[in-house]
Image (tube, rainbow over all chains, first blue to last red; front, top):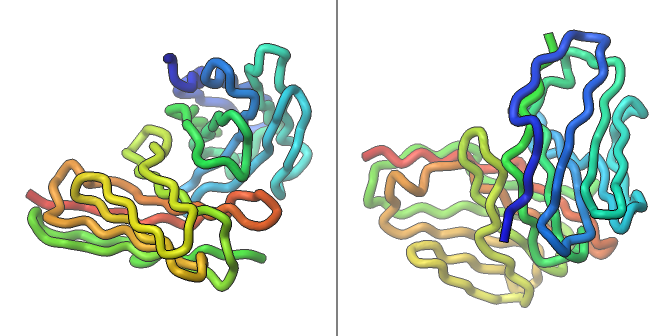
Length: 114
Length: 110
């Protein structure tokens, strides 16, 4: 079966702009989690959506938001981009969400803010 | 704040050597997952351990969950260049949250 698909793979944005990233989970998986990965901070949890509802949220400012559609596809949005938002953004899907026995990750979106 | 400490942070060894990576915490986890991540890609799940004292083997990789379910180790026998990558551990706590270690960057030199 198809894996987790994230688009776009690479993105360059200017400080102050906004960006939307997309994630299509494995068919049948209802949970989508988003992570930010940077060399200095490692994997930082952004939020988790399950059946279109945000179930958990990490410690990120309100500029970071997300949503999930009825087909389980998810988007995350970052408004008013800052240089420090440059990172690899990873989407992970699972059938049950956090507390399950493992995630399947996408290849990520590499966001560079200049 | 719950922490999962991974050590070492960085390891560079010759092909054929053995190595062990550790994940330690003062908290109990209901299960613990190990992932390997290659540059520019997302982490790939290697194994999940659930029972205290559990040992799982994946070819040359041996994973162990501590008896008290607070720690875990990954042992690689006769490391090969293909084992190069970032190894991450993640534990599921009592609130069903996933707590991540900072990772171990492993380089196997031919």
